[in-house]
Length: 155
Image (tube, rainbow, N blue to C red; front, side):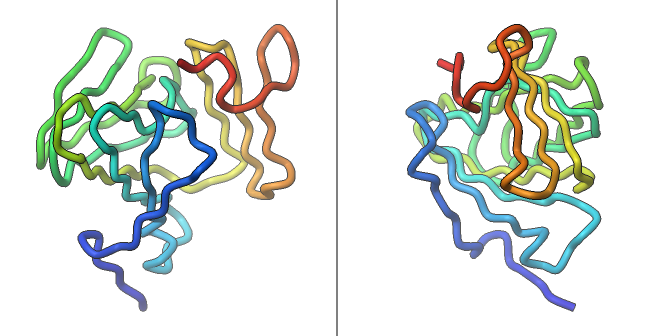
């Protein structure tokens, strides 16, 4: 058995992430040896968001470990603080976007089933993403126009 300390996990930023979405991640579930759940730690600096507004077809969970985040959901924005836990149900009612509007960097833990293939829908940019488990087969589609880049239409 393997363990990982979420407070000491090494965070990685992706240089390809555009401004507004510069968040760091650590796949702590994988580091702990997990295979059935996707458990990821995120560091969200001030003025940044975790990812575009989206929903998936699995239940997702968010736990705020440090700081404050604003979560956009279908019926408006909700502010969450350290210790707050939120569940996003599968499908359109579970749509969400996690943003940090405070001065302090926020740290959140997100978890869901780790099953692939996985599908995410991005209502603001009219895209659908498909993750097969093989990085060479990741697919991002614009509903009306065919395949597009992940960040197209996000602002």
